[in-house]
Amino acid sequence: MNKKSQHSQDKFIDVIVAIVLVIIFIAIGNEMGWFGWVLPVLKWILIMITLGIVIGVVIWKTSSIEYGVENVKIKDEIDRIKELLKDYEPPPIRDEKEFERSFYSHLKAKDSNMKIQFQQKLTNGGRIDILIDNQIGIELKIAESKNHLRSLIGQVEEYLEVLDKLLIVILDVGYLDRDTIVYYIKKFEKKGAVAFVVKGKIKRHNLKKL
Image (cartoon, rainbow, N blue to C red):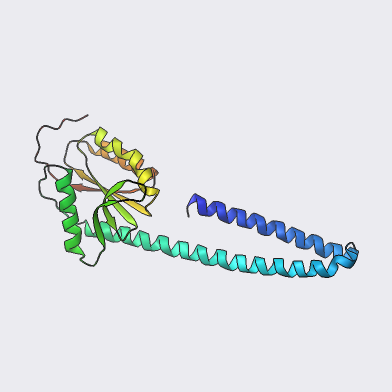
């Protein structure tokens, strides 16, 4: 559950607690005879408040269930995409554009029924390499230098403003050591993304480690 949903539920609980306290106060006042002629009006108010609580609880529970189911669906979709990548062996590539086309072709070949959009513009003005079912973004990066991976950290937050989930696929071409790649994977995951590494080769020979 995200922080916004949790905050809304906490506020809803606070409202219910406040209403319950009011009801208890009215019940005590009725027993003590504090309200006199206004009691019939208070009874109607009490009935309306009770109905409001019941309806609110039903809506809250329903939305919580739907949110949970949606999260499960997205997780299952991420797992399915990662499963499709297990046998992905990209040919030697020249640059990220070639990597993107290779990756896109692989997904289309593995599952022709999957809704896949290539180089899709997002509602916040950004652009994602691949968009799955209008919910899951896939950003592809070649691990050619620390700067190249570092530049993606800030982008993750922007992507997740409009996407339900972000999968980052890193092509390990041997220019960075494993510990460095893992370091950036943890950075991406801390921001809320899911990271995945595939092995590959690059045709260029003028890249330098940074």
